[in-house]
Length: 534
Ligand SMILES: Cc1cc2nc3c(=O)[nH]c(=O)nc-3n(C[C@H](O)[C@H](O)[C@H](O)COP(=O)(O)OP(=O)(O)OC[C@H]3O[C@@H](n4cnc5c(N)ncnc54)[C@H](O)[C@@H]3O)c2cc1C
Image (cartoon, rainbow, N blue to C red; front, side, top):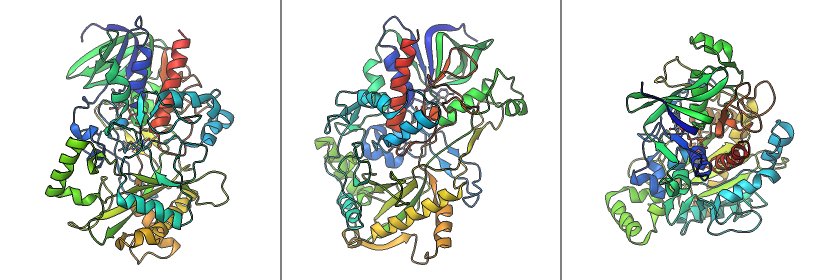
């Protein structure tokens, strides 16, 4: 073991939240910051080409997780992509830029014990992070590190999708992050100058040369080091060598909603009985560590097209060549597409105050690991829908006390009957949208679900058999003041000192949209809270 090196802050996990904190905390040149990331650098060109998302939901930039058998989803072990690379999820995600609905944050503040997190209080952090190149005004930031833009040229199928939604009765919405969330439109994306703007690109790269910031990749934290109940550093593996880093001020955990609870448990913070089962000495008995796992269970429908009208045609060698050239020369064309171009927020329950369903339209088929596709040589389109506020809660638990063993990820998909009901409504509405005339004229047949699926029970079975993660695990170290809360509203871990959790795992409940921008908002607020406390 090498001698411990000293820092003021040791940040574990260089994903969406970790990159924000590395930037903001090292703004003060007198503060020494270490950022540790288990994955490698984000050198791979597919990370930076927007369309690369379609190749990124499995493979070397991910952890390779699968769920435990999902008892309400036909006992399937469902692939569970999470980023393992600098930038974390923001380096491999679909670049969809949404913030959720103000009611989500008001619920955090008013019902879930998170004082200071109402929408009015956190809005400034969204605006501070946002570098929108199109919208401005009360609802948007224009100068933030997170580049946000409109797609220059949405695919013809995406345009037809938005028109089909209007034919189905959903109003057109040009801005899902404005005062009105409901409706259908083309997503804004975390793309800047036709390249992905991950948290690594937006926040970390511009400050990498700061003398007070050290970034170490291929370094996986094994455990947090404690002096009594005070976190004083981290033990980590760096390319085969075990090292220690000392934190004079704080250890900040941003290892994501799977990695964070795993590290906490391995460090002796979690439910006493679970720690004892694995022979881990408890530093602090905290019942909520690894509990409350909440994710959006998405169900896809897939249609085969009459011809090659979608992005799929560019998967062939000639298409790849021409689109690659177009992108290289002009930064336009299919390579500049994030694939998941279109979307909608709408209602399964028409009497609800805010949308309870979100749709993602993919101008292609077979883009994501584990999603059905059209026959080889044919072209398709995909529409995914999910329940925005699922009621099922799952867990992240240790398989063993060995850091090399993957955690047991059990999202307990469809574990509440209301989630199944809403999911089925999402599938039915998806089919309805595909049947409207603007899309119908391009559709040869809807392959998934096929015509044989008619009754409520058959749709339920379809959802159980085809649903999957939408890559939004959250809440596994939730913020709050109840007995299941792991961190307080300042994101400090209950019962110990010198330790905060500042990532998606600290959400008290899942918000009603994609989770990248909300996680970045949390890290921006965390940076302010940390700076003002020292
Ligand atoms: C395939 C995919 C598509 C998505 N699409 C969208 C989208 O279109 N829009 C959107 O808003 N959101 C999307 N998301 C979700 C969004 O990207 C995540 O919610 C967000 O990135 C979570 O940020 P985080 O900081 O909590 O965790 P992460 O970004 O996952 O960061 C955690 C980091 O910690 C590292 N780590 C873990 N354990 C350790 C350890 N022990 N030591 C050192 N490092 C460790 C990991 O390798 C990772 O880099 C998507 C996510 C995925 C995976």
